[in-house]
Image (cartoon, rainbow, N blue to C red; front, side, top):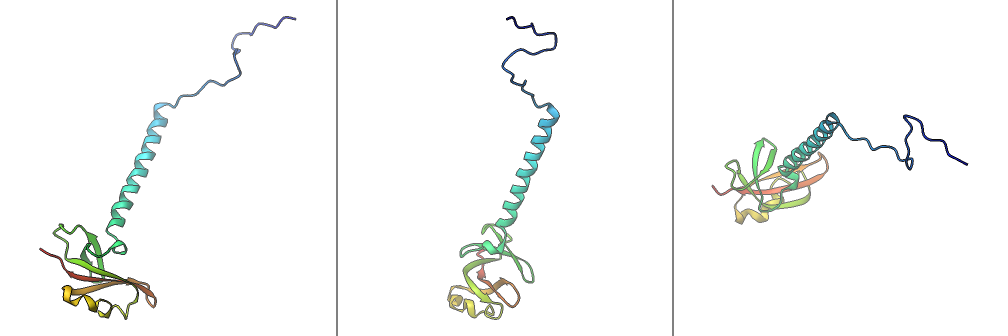
Length: 131
């Protein structure tokens, strides 16, 4: 028994489909999406680094508003305060200075409370940053 010869336009082989290559427009879109994702990651990383919720003893903060601070590098000219301690599970009422009273001999000058009204949060005990 003989097999017929394949005609024009018929593919011989194992039945594998030909591999498609991505064109330059598709690569441009892919690279654009990857750059956008990387940009978002950088913005989130930089923004969260200044979040006072991440502050710990030894960090420095800048007062950016009446009840707002952000973490900055201690050699930054904006560094107004150094964090002496962080006290967790404090109400806003407890944050009136009694939370930090044990740090008075270490230069305590102020404190910063962050939390939910009527609930608990944390207190940053602050001293003036060294010039």
